[in-house]
Length: 281
Image (tube, rainbow, N blue to C red):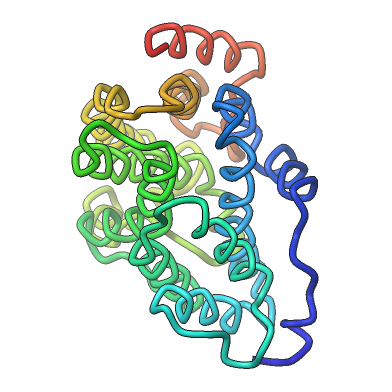
């Protein structure tokens, strides 16, 4: 790892808040409902995940080294070259405040490495594994920060909700990912619906119906278990409702009849957030 990567200053809370609001508008809305005692820590932890994901997506030269530094932290190893990377500096601070599951960060980094390698999922089980690694792990970390009545149940639900949200991301971003040479729909599923041509706008109705049903099934399993959380139930329920609505927006727009992202209007998201939050005070 180069010395220059270690010379980067650790991000401030202001940067973490600004990043969340800029690149994760739905998550940022939900974060406003988090208890003040944990809200800022959630911003900082989200920044770690988001930074690594962006470094990999942008194919930055230091992406592999920054991921490796977090992997070393997850194993309990000291920084390899002196000063910690910005992400490790945040994790050191957060680990002093919360019982962070280091194995979840190791699994997240495995997902990042799959992206660096350009791995494509062969079947739906591999899609589930990928979604666990890059999103279910994030859910587990958040469940540990928020606390739970039954931590094992909460962790399992957090994994399932993370998988549901990541499958939603995959469907929302099909065109954007394809433009970048990435396909996250399982190869076997694509063959079942006619091959790569099934991803094209106007030709993906059946494929999207199948994939939406899979995501909805995960939401149905996860959402009732949000009640296990000791704190932040309203925020997580609101995030789940707003994310799930992306699936409904895809349906309203004709199952990918036109290219581009399905975007839920802000007013609609706010209404859904209020309704979901009211059920889990």
